[in-house]
Length: 474
Image (cartoon, rainbow, N blue to C red):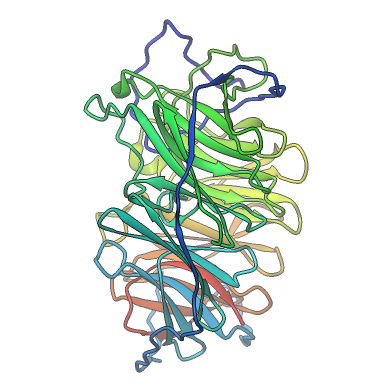
């Protein structure tokens, strides 16, 4: 099914938070471009002496938590993971990254909130003070500072994946993009009539001055290509309250904002899209970026963007309950890179979709499951959900404010459920082991579960407020 679009003379009212278009855009080097002012500023660069981040310890609770569901099966859980990286203190002044030592769960090291390289060895953070922004590269293994750069202006790393993570780093780890301001997505309202949008493009060595891009219009960050050749931006169009937008590409080699918008193949070049963005995952190698969008008029869809070819496909998901805003927010994505499969799941609506993600994306299977009851307001919003694939690729774990649901990937049917008196906000699966971890905002703890039996084994109380579990490993 083709995505709906709005021609230049049509008006459709829908406010968007994170917006992206589907399409194909190939522009020759001679293509006329929108005027863009590019400047470089004299930045202070400094190689940082090796200094360890503050390390604190706290006692871990190991009490067993009561659960109200039968075990999925029985098996002894063994772990090889030694560390768990958690986003802590979300919504407070202490928003940061905390590394927990496993199995006890004590705090081993703290880091500023930032974006990590794909090998999880380097963390990049950006902090503004006054009219200056400090960008810091930190070694995630030792906590030592690697390099630092200070630039003029207030910039930050852009939020992605429903705001749960920060983005801006290319897959090859060589290019970093900052957005002017706090990084919040500009409100699609008439009062936000921003005439110029600024971005800072940095070499991650932090040894050269950044390029400052000044784009006429109201732009926000979407994603960046694997090698940093293209920065994909969302251009909000007036009147902002109508929620109209286009996807544009800034070519970092040509130093130009491409004139043609990214549209789905077959759509007119002036097509304007609409929708609410949510979960986002990046495929192995960084070529494909998958973003889930909801649209109360058309229905939810997955925007599959090939950042190298600058082409895209829109994959329509089941339209069940498309007008139910809270239920639509329960859609989540999980990527199985090894088998080239992407799963889109909505527990509240009872929908599971398997997408072929190796090559040109297309929907392979759909399945209906028994919907879970939408709960009353709890610490975790009723529409919140996250998911992950097991190490053996046989299970799909989905958590939301009702608990944990396990889906068999061969049948796309539910094989087990675990409900507790608490709401879960995030999940991390051990890459080479038999355990998984879920975060619980009600108590501020991380729970360690047996991935085979579903048994809640221990509580990791590292004195944190664990909103998102970002990485588990050794």
